[in-house]
Image (cartoon, rainbow, N blue to C red; front, side):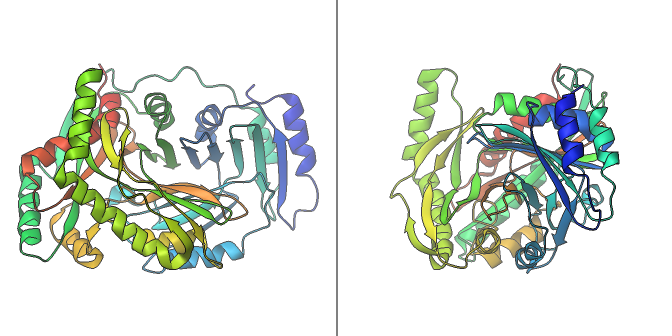
Length: 440
């Protein structure tokens, strides 16, 4: 049994009562949020997990309340919808995700994913770094007995295995040659003056002989990338999973933090080479210029929504498992009346995933990219009852279904970009997901 009889009895007692209103239970539970989601996901139509580098881990299954929106006003619509949500206990956490494009994805593989949504799970296991609790939410008209019965039957999942022990096949979409052609076209447009920077993405489709368990993949991503935002968002038989190094925005009270990354290099072979590669990245005029475009744009978008904003004069180096990045941490104080969704509406898409100028870059991506990004380079995160939370840029990710994984990566293209070098850089970014799906 995954949950103790005492915890289950406490849940049952707290959610009993009149069914015309929302009922909540908040009970201490020693269960690990990822272990909980892995065990419970097969019993629910949806399951979601998020872990932040700061130590917050949230695993939720089922849907007690949900709002979705699409189009250019989707964040405003979600903000309005949240005003009508039920009053939540302080411990409750909602999970949110959104696609790169305002209208969402059109490709069949993304058919179950909304343009943007906020979900209050039926059951959420939360570890905030100081304690673990289980939050159960039962909507009006629903009987609590069904959820309690499902929780009573949960058994711990076995050890997480790697999904790629069998043979596999790999296909690039678009092909490497086609993508390099798109990079050439982007460089020409930038040198002609119609763009300063544009981000071009590509995908790799991996087919394996073994069924992929998405939360086992999430487990391995978390072990190998503890400094990243690790996530899994499963709807039906399809799951969006990844380990992103990039924080889009964090809100705590009236304090905000953004951490844009732009300018990349591989990790070196050994400490000495790693330091040398990092030093070269810090000294690269091309990468410093690309990074400055992103930071300047984000700062300009945040200033009207803040009473104070601090932007470091120079970037630092951020190292993760397979890549190192130029990184700048921007902090500030929100102006009165600003919300998480107001910030998202101003920030997304940043030049780190779209380009600059924004409108021209988005039009160029629509014209030449040749694939549907779906939620790749959108966002995933959590939101508390007080409006605080974290949202990460959805990077280093893949869409998993049965025996197929569709992986995504992209690069910022500037005037000095060389197509083959950019293609190689996307391969570094594919590596965390690709290595898991093709393990032998």
